[in-house]
Image 1 (cartoon, rainbow, N blue to C red):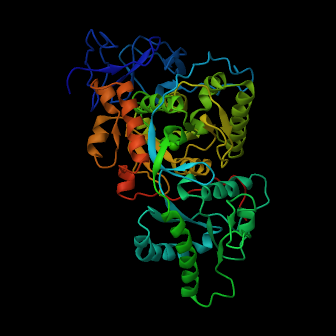
Image 2 (cartoon, rainbow, N blue to C red; image 1 turned 180 degrees about the vertical axis):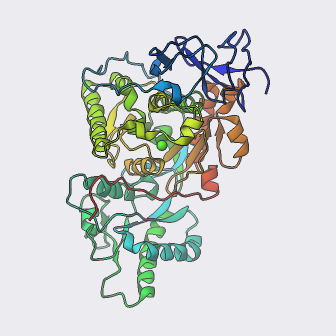
Image 3 (spheres, rainbow, N blue to C red; image 1 turned 60 degrees about the vertical axis):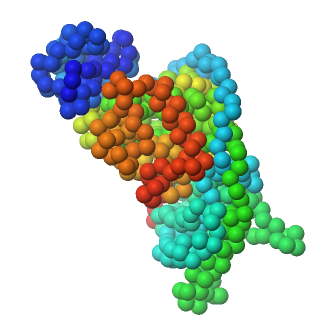
Length: 523
Ligand code: CA
């Protein structure tokens, strides 16, 4: 176990967390060199949990990240364990009178000469993988598409060695939904934009049932997908295999049609080769899941450092998870590039407050039992550690859920914090690389983009040695730094983007389902 070690984030904080694996016993005294110098623990404190650095009276503020994470419910003596039982959560920050674009602009020092080997797409974007995606309009066709995908993988894919994979874009939407209701545009545009993800090379093919509410022309209206010219120069219509079409007699006829269409697209995808592409073409989605008190100390600051490197290289980085940034809205609006962008941030957060309000709940519904067991007392504390992933540069643009990126730089893509919904919406936004931090541990992965997982603690990185791609826990151990790990992550992203290496989730083919965000009613 070694000497008692603590981590204090900001000089004005009145709490620190225990760094030692397994926690620290009552009576442990922190040595002179430690941030908690001289403090004696009054009780056992688990790893990652807070203790008081001074006596805190009932009603006084508890500070971590130089931010009040709540008021003491009772007198807390120096060295005592501070968990959610003794903290009253502060009220949500008011959305009026926020600072807008006030933060002194961090001048971006360009980072040049970083490249990856990727696939150039007809629309100018770049893919990190070369995948045939079969888009579906409705859940009804999923079984058929699964069957076809298995056949394509075993019979066709070996003929097209430059294509990495074939996947069905399967989902729970498409019928039995109030398709004209307010907010129904969210799941529809999400599906549309996923079909156009840069890792799918602009080859759009659709399998439809026929009678569903989400008709192919509604999902992908003319002009929304790349135009393909026929040999005679005419524009090819959207490529749709309709299962209810009278031409299909029997199940195998449907499978044959899907395979015939897939072969044509595979042939085009196969003609592409990786080429040297500037790092500025990376579109990285960052998120966290299964967080603990180390998330905001090790893994998320590492991602934040790498985010700054990517922004300096001209790339696009999206951060999301509305309920995990709500308590830091003042930081975000201050970092907005312009007052208009600050207003767009507020608009998205207000929309989400209303959405949660419809269920008589609020952002406090976010935290999980695992978060609390890991030392995160409430959503305010979690949010402060979550926002760090966005680095330090100005926020350049805001996306509503399901929208696609139109500009480079740092982007707030408003999504729920749910891992699979956030990942699905970031896919729609056009990410070609995903970075995911975890403290409690999750095997999360996606079929469409590589997912790099960063562990917050060495203990997790060792136990899940074949699931975690980077160990940020070494920062808490005192054997590495945020800067060093940030550069490691940046280089790892370029290597994985180039297809020279696979992340563990990709290696084991751990693919979570796509989960659409549908704020509209079902029928
Ligand atoms: Ca998440």
